[in-house]
Image 1 (cartoon, rainbow, N blue to C red):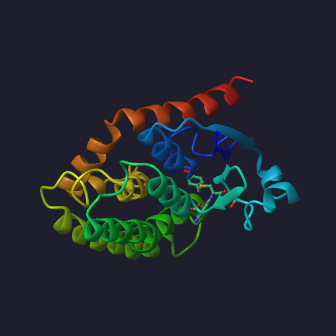
Image 2: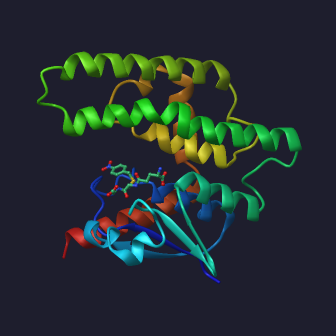
Length: 216
Ligand code: GTB
């Protein structure tokens, strides 16, 4: 069966690939698994039909036969488990790649999402600058640690893996800031991932949806 994922009908990021369906698309492209996309408006995401797939009424979801999944990390892990190429073969490296997947989503992503919230929703607050300063310091701390771990390696755990998909997608949210440029090896890591044909296909597919919606 062809899996079906959900995505924004009109993504607020204007097709910059920041919405989390991008992670799932990228993983599917990497393993060569064709997929279909069901586009949803914000209103449709909160309707019972979608809430039966996603308890929080969000995208992305993933349906394959009688399996319905939510949470981009769980979906990418599921794809990586069922197809060759996104997790190392060595058992210890496999376990460490999973650790990096969790690290991307639970250690690196939170302050980066906080920063986006400050930029998008808290500009007018009297404490905006102070809070931005605090959160950017936390991000720099995390990226400093990540940079030290990555060193001169191409990928987090030997060969390219699902961990790199999640970590790079998390880091891409920093592109409008100058923070990424402060870490030369992390900037190169993101660029290396973006040069992958599977990334380019996934990016083009989600951009085409935004472009089509804007011309209607
Ligand atoms: N933990 C979940 C996961 O990883 O799957 C989080 C899912 C999530 O946040 N989904 C967002 C959503 O459905 C879209 S991706 N939001 C609607 C809602 O909650 O009602 C988050 C996102 C949105 C917009 C941008 N942007 O404009 O740059 C970036 C990321």
